[in-house]
Image 1 (cartoon, rainbow, N blue to C red):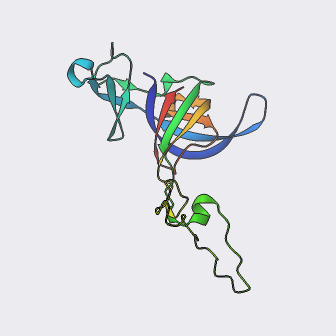
Image 2: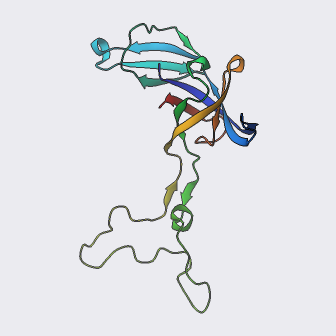
Image 3: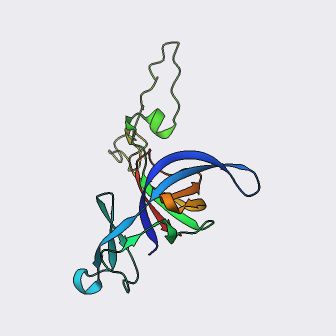
Length: 182
């Protein structure tokens, strides 16, 4: 197995082996129960369905040899100093204007200016007669799946199923995240 699901607990600080204060994120990883094994013969692809806290998610694997439904996977799958990728849903910020969403600047606020926070022109004239794809406009901000790549595991507390990783992890507290070996 190369991946487990967990819940983001929050952030804290620890001292590393040199004595530097390091910001870490605490993730409660597992125990994840294998609820179903999907094979090439039955499903057309190989995957394992993991059950974490009543939520079932699927992880693709190369081999399903020796893996059976009912097995329980815990945090001892990982080692301190190992590099992992962590995926989760980013914090959703709702509908946002172009200034907040794309970090654009506003216009002058005085001397009769009528260009304060509006977008202005969004395209050229008759040709092409449409708005180009990818135009930076107002819309939904955040709430998408984000992956932090190459994150180092700083500490493991096996008896509580806790994984401490360097830096931040996508989402808010209580967010479901996937920790996958890089």
